[in-house]
Length: 377
Image (tube, rainbow, N blue to C red; front, side):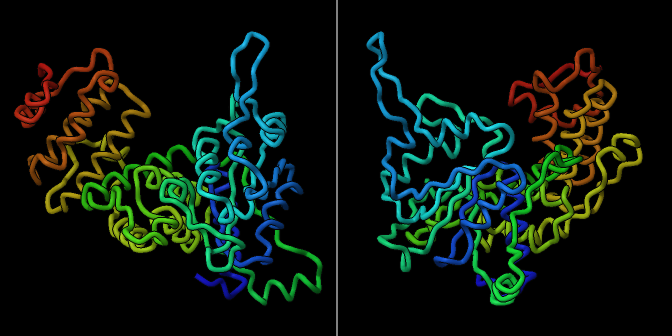
C-alpha cells in the first residue's frame, strides 16, 4: 500500500503507536529516507528510552549473547551493551532494529529469541520493552535479504511512506510527526477477551485460516495467519477499540498480522455478528432464545458466556452458563455448544460446590466420550 494522503499517513502512524504500546513487534516496510527512524526515535521526547541498532553492523552473538567463561569455569552468554541499557532504563523503552532486511539469515535467526522471549544471552529484558524494526524491500535494500517465514511471523507488517502533503508542510513548519504512544488503557482486558472470542469463532467457521503459510518466498516474508499472529490481531484490535482508533487503523493492524485477504474476511465476518451481551444472557437464562441463529453465531455467543463466567466465577453463573448451552443445543443442535460445555465442566472452571443442572443431560454422549460427564443435581 502506498500512503498518499495525510489521513492515510496518520492512520499508519496510529497503527505503529498501538503496536509499540501493546508491546507487539512491528516491522515498517518502506523506501530509504522517508522518516521511519525519526518517527520511532521521536518516542524519546515522550519519555521512552530508545536503542537504535543498524542490524547489519552486528553479529549473531550481539543478540544471542557472547560466550564468556566465568570464574568457576562455567560458560555464560553475556548480554551486549544495548540490552543492558534497555534493562536498566526506567519506564518504557524501544529496541529499534533498523535496516532489518540487510541482515543475513543467521543474524535474523539470532534476533528471534529477543523478539518473542525477551531473552538476550543470560539477560531477560523487562516487559516494558517494545520491539520495532524497519526494512526496505529486497529490490531497493543494500544487499537485501528476503525474510524467512519464522522471522516474518514474529512481526506485524505495516507499509510506510511519507506523502508530499506531510513532507512539504513539515519542511516549512519544522514540526515533524511524533509517534503516538499510550500509557494505561481502560477496559482493555474486557475488550481483549471479547476479541479472542471472536477470533475463536471465526476460526471454527474457517479452520483453514488458523495457519496458512504462503507458497511463494516473497509472500512468506510478509504477514500470514498462524496461531501467533491471530493472537497478535486479537490483542491489537482490542487495543485499537479501547483507544477509539478508526476502522481503517483496525484494518491496517489486522492486515499486518494475518494478511490482507484473511483480514478482510475476518473483519467482514465480525461486522455481521451482532452478538448479545453475555451478561444479559446470564442475568435472564430463561429468556434466552437461540432459535434461527447460525451455528457460528451460537458458538461465539456461548464462548463469550464462558469468558464472562471465567472472569467472574460463581456457582450461580456457572450453572446458568450450562443451562444456556443446553438451550442452544435444543434450538440449533449440540455441535456449537459442546466445546463450551466441555470447558465449563473441566477442573479449575467449575466453582467449588456448583450444582450441575439436569439440562446437562443433552450433552451426555459428548461428555461421556471425553470422560467429563459430571453427576447432575
